[in-house]
Image (cartoon, rainbow, N blue to C red; front, side, top):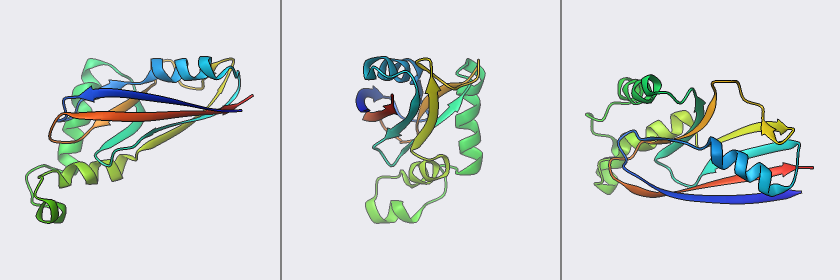
Length: 138
């Protein structure tokens, strides 16, 4: 059985982090399955999907880390091509990745107590974002 669950939301950009865990649990429940694998994927090239402990400290630490790894200040070749000033956002997305895969059983994803699936918005402006959660199970 394969079930596809689409989620859309608006973001502010500039490092906003959105907890997707409730959407993941909802997708599993709606799929009618109890065990399998699921993929969480964003369709944008200036965002990422990963897991963190979704708490205020890390919500500040992740954007600070990204700024150290891929700062906004330098001019990137993407900026010269498109003039939109978000070359850093594309590089951050490539670094983190745009999807996450996890197994589940008993209707719950196999995540640690303090581990949530999150969407990371790296872009320099608000956007409408789309996330696809595909559940494959029995």
